[in-house]
Length: 125
Image (cartoon, rainbow, N blue to C red; front, top):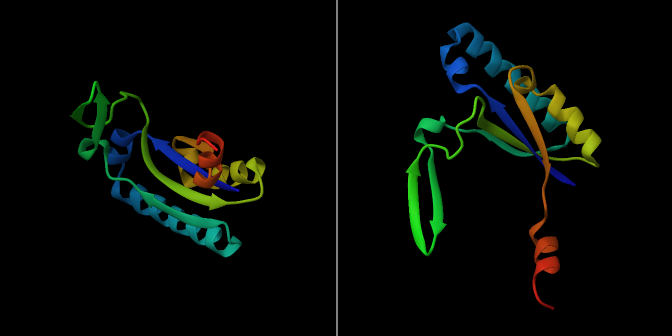
C-alpha cells in the first residue's frame, strides 16, 4: 500500500534558523531518504518551495479564481512530502516518526487511493 508522508513546519522559523542548523537538517534528510531507499520503501519525494511563491486556484460558478499564496493561514506550512510503499499504516507511521520533520513540525500520514480503485467505485458500470 502506498502512503504520502506530508511534512508540515513553520517556514518563518526555518528561514530564520542559522545556516549550520539548515546544513544539519539537510544532512538528516539525506540520511533519512537513503534509509528509505535501502529499505525499498521509497517511491518519491520532494521539498516544496515556500508558500510565498504558491498559487491557489478555485473554480466557482464556472469562474476561475487565482490567488497568490496558500489558501489556509496556518502556523505550519506544507514543506515537502515522501511517497512510500509499505505493508500497512503502522509501518507508514513508523517511517513518519523517523523523518527529521517530525521533530520540527508535524507529519501527516495519508493512504493513497489508487486511481483504478477509485474509478471502479465511483463510475457507472
